[in-house]
Amino acid sequence: MTSIGLLGAGNIARILAQHQNGFRISGVFDRHKDRRDRIAASTGAISYSTFEEFLAGDYNSVVEVASISAVRQYAAQILGRGKDLIILSVGGLADKPFKEKLVWMAQDRGCKIRIPSGALFGLDNMKIGRISPLDRLTLRTTKPPHSLQLTVTERTCLFKGNMSECIRQFPKNANVAVALGLAAGHEVAVELWVDPAVEHNTHEIFASGEFGEMKTLIRNVPSPDNPATSYLAALSIVTLLNELQQPLIVGT
Ligand SMILES: NC(=O)c1ccc[n+]([C@@H]2O[C@H](COP(=O)([O-])OP(=O)(O)OC[C@H]3O[C@@H](n4cnc5c(N)ncnc54)[C@H](O)[C@@H]3O)[C@@H](O)[C@H]2O)c1
Image (cartoon, rainbow, N blue to C red; front, side, top):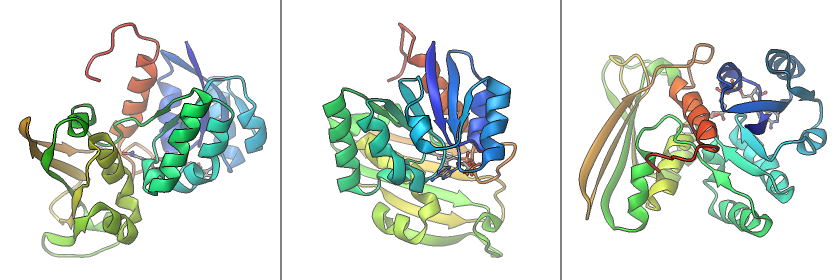
């Protein structure tokens, strides 16, 4: 069974704690003591009060479910210690030199960086973009206006342009766009809409190329305790962790 350290003890961490089947949470670190203690109490994990002690914990994999800034702050140290790293706040890899440094470190230390599909479906198939040219890759995200503290009376486009500019203007949209770009190895054209008629965040992906064409639509149900986070994102980590030990891997 895979033993993991959890970096972050918020909403997603709580869902992971409820789904420990093919993995065991052995250590947890969060800047909020009450949160890390809660996860520790429900899983039997050790609650670490400093990152340095957490880093020395007895597990080979760290699962980041904290924040983009935590990825920037801690990822290199985790890989430097030779631990595998699963990153959910994938917007932390938007900075190309930083991402390349982490990849180089992982290669050097013989460990892996894994990106779960998060709030999207179909990231596995998007990897064909790295071996067969795409002529279109668009991510259209539609959010309820209140999630961006906006009031509008009709469907409104907030942004249309490339991924890097979108992340600069709307950093909270970074995770899905960066994950898609990394999977496909391709620039992502991003559209961000608010629509008073939608209740949940919706992501549509349009791609075409040598393979043919595809479109997907995922309407994310929010996590029970955090309306800004999709439940699917937590499930995607559980799936990834469960598959680490499986002899038969499907759809990768
Ligand atoms: N890739 C995706 O599609 C996707 C989908 C959903 C969520 N996410 C990301 O996953 C992360 C976790 O989501 P969540 O809903 O559990 O968030 P959350 O706010 O409920 O919990 C995050 C926890 O991490 C802790 N934390 C953050 N930065 C830290 C730091 N530098 N040091 C120590 N502790 C730190 C916070 O105290 C908090 O308890 C977020 O960054 C979110 O954006 C990604």
